[in-house]
Image (spheres, rainbow, N blue to C red):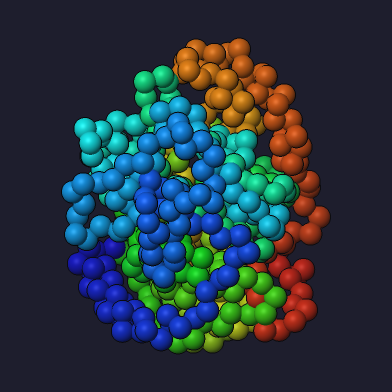
Length: 475
């Protein structure tokens, strides 16, 4: 696609989206049962996007080891900085927060980091581990010299009355820090328990996604601008797809839809994806067989050695009537869905839904998603569409999102901090300690080929059994 056309269409879409902003801000917010918002190291509460972050210096703070921590304030903040990033809590020894949980289930945990310099301490030098409810969320983590703030988001299943977050310096003499913490209940249908394994060999379901620890590594608004937490019902950030879009042909077009998105009864509505995602897309214009490889492809950097949950969002905002779009969906080059007919799923236009795929990394450090035409594609129509993509890393067999060492060994390694040399000796022990987690990763053969994670529908009792899912062949 020519760069000049891309920017011209994007600018036009952005203007329309900005103009229509005020009509969508009135949408109701999700109200979580558990809603812990903590401003770390601050002596006063802070409000961000109408959300109140409570100071962890408060006597009722969930911080359980304040004697081993240091509050720090940025003495020279930018006049445009967000207040929660102007203070931090420093951990020179293992420390923890414990959050009371009223409702068991999936919780969103967000950790906010901004490496400012204050009191002769440069937070970019910090290196530490973070454990969340027995999972290794971050290992040897360092913000580095990143000037902007960093937000790490996790989905953690809580079946007890607390979520505990441990900060452990990587070694004695080092330290950890955090600027703000969010621990909030996730919408009940935000993480479905079943996804499709995509490996090109056989059709399988992956059962037990809700009990996995997940880390959001990419959340992409395809064809549209950045979506900030203020414009998302569960306070997420969606970034534009330009740096990930790799198609070399000029057949893709950006599209903005100015009408009403038809969220349907029976599912998550806007908690799964906001209007701003479903009202924009990239589409493939009619190829009529003239281009050898007309697929649209996105490439995302990922860590090797993990499974990934790939959630793809679709909403037909391109058609003038039902039944005009048929296309294939690929993940890592494998055919994940063949001859996808959007209207056979939603029975109406501009009605969003998503589907979850589980895929292993292919040792390249890159995860690819594509959409492209099929032999059922109609002449002079649209050959493919995609509105959004989310990619989440899944914990490995030792309950870690950051290496081969389990949480127990991270805590036991302090203050030596040399857990790297212990890997050959403790990996087996970690595996045994994580046996209960492994039991949740069972997979079963697919009998019913469709298990769409569908947004709510205005038509009750929609039967999806006639839709065929084919997980074979590689593009």
